[in-house]
Length: 338
Image (tube, rainbow, N blue to C red; front, side, top):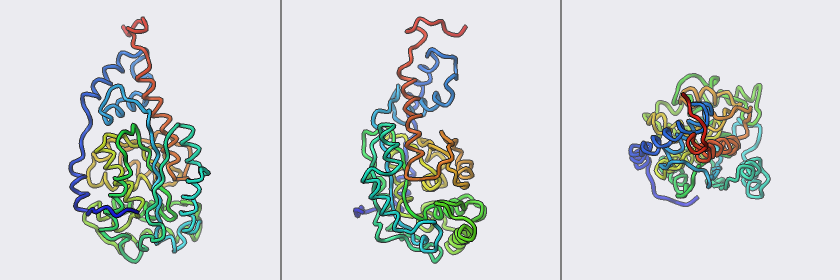
């Protein structure tokens, strides 16, 4: 991982200055939508997606010609407690699989014509086991956020964000618990497939982590204590995308939990984001309710690696294509509503 110089205070300053939507582009999109050859509202969420795209791309009509999926990968110290059905070595092995083109996300990127980038965050040095204290130092957390920001290149039309990290649904659950309340049992799920006593151990680790790390004071401090390097990178990428006017599609539970840190700091921080799908991980639906997001797809997936977000790119592309390509009533010589 490169060594960008950053502090959590700097991240807080950036978070406080995120730009809002382009109201002129939104208005132009709404006006064009009224003139297209269909009954008002007939395309449902495709219409609101086109409006959302225009608002955050700052142009009307919106377009999705250069989408990208980014997967951030990191390791978690808590994985040594057996909270996953797979050993921590699988993180690096899956990164190699991404590079070789053998993962599900590779096939999905090909199917929606999206570019794929995978970024490792010091896989040889996992976070601290957060049942014993904070997962990251302030410097380490800020560096990971800055790394995520640096990964967002200008000129992209749409960004899908995912992760790879054995143990990160445990971190996602702990973050969700600390930010939104409840108990470990409310947020714990099978992740890679744990059940029975292993799931009980995972739930206990979530409760222990939140208890030992105590009230953090603010959302970014909560991320430092209970998150992971790849989750911090996702939070940074979400911020950078907002600054660059690139709409974002979030993946499943872990990616949404990373972004929810920003929501906890500023309820408008995720307005430029949609959630690609609802994971079968039970905490994800609960988390979506907390942050007020309705997923685009609900297919029972729980793979991670940006798979659901990438698949949802097809829906967003369809929304842009319909809005830009349909004829107006006047162009088509079709009578409008009476």
